[in-house]
Image (tube, rainbow, N blue to C red; front, top):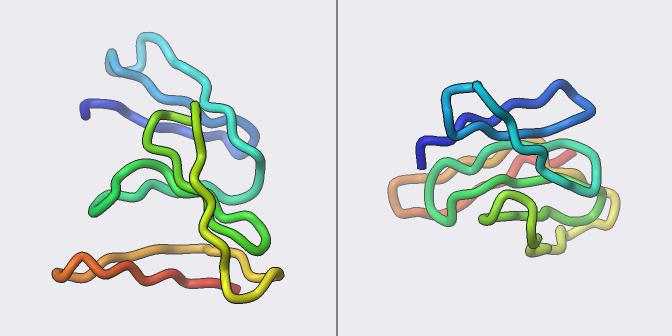
Length: 88
C-alpha cells in the first residue's frame, strides 16, 4: 500500500509520502505489530484479546484469546495462510 508505519512506544503513525508528513493512528494501548500477509493491517495485543485494524485505526475487530490474561506478542502465517500467535 506504499505506507510506512512508525512508533516511538507512546504514539503510532503512518506516512504515505516517504516521511514528509505523518498521520497518527488511535489505538487502545499495549503492544502493536504489523500483519503482513492474509488479512493485512495492524494487530494490537491487549490482555485477553487481539485487535486488528485494516483502516489505520478507524475501526478495530476483536478476537478473544483462550485466556483473559494472555497477550499476543508475535504472529506468523504459513504457506497455507494459517495464522499462529505467540502469547505470554
